[in-house]
Amino acid sequence: MQLTNPKNFSGWLQPHSIEWYNQLSNHQKGYIYTWNSTLTKPNGESIFDEEVALMIANKKVLDVGCGHGKFTIENSFIAKEIIGYDVTDNFIQEGLKNKRENTSFVVGNVKEGLPFQQNEFDCAYIRKGPTSAYPFLQNVVKSEGTVIGLHPGDDVHKELPILFPNLFEPSIGTPILDLLNKRIESSNFSYSNIEIINSIEFIHSPLDLLKLRCFGQHQSIYETLKEHDLEKINKIFNQHSTKEGLPITLSRYLIRAII
Image (cartoon, rainbow, N blue to C red; front, side, top):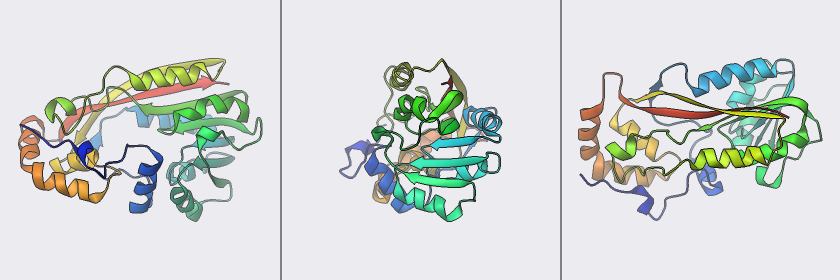
């Protein structure tokens, strides 16, 4: 059952590229998933969020890759002071609309460094943000300060290329883990550890599956796939789904480090 490969469309953008983030921010105000799903707990996000809350209490905190700042503002009720940093200006502007007195937002590209003073922060976190930030954190986070990171695992949604070949492409090897190890090695942390956390995500419907695949892409790509492939996707989805939805692996890498 041949499905369309959306990467063959001329308007397809590489996910998480600067162009992709700009397009996403032009289409919606925040970095918000557009598909409906249910996550089993505990999962990478829930564990990360709990550990961040404990880490930042009454501290000056850096949120790297903050997006539109929702998580930053939630944490501002716990932290003494918190700064959100992101490359996408539209997201930063959205964060500024909702910021509190102890919250700031700064726009910039992590690949060019972090524009903060040495030892300015007590701790920092990266919630599915840029891995390129790790080597720079040693300069802006105090000695013995804590860093926590959350990133997609290489096994994330590993069932989808098997169930929906061509629509989804398989990941070969462990490119994300290899990159994380490289980043951490160059960061000279006094301590670091990477934990793999796997749980289940239930995708609610075939249309939600298409929204997942087309997240951040131009609406025309979603509409074309819907017109051409929805009947085939429906058939596969219904064969493998449960009453909760289509179960797929939600895989995350959780990084814990000390400067």
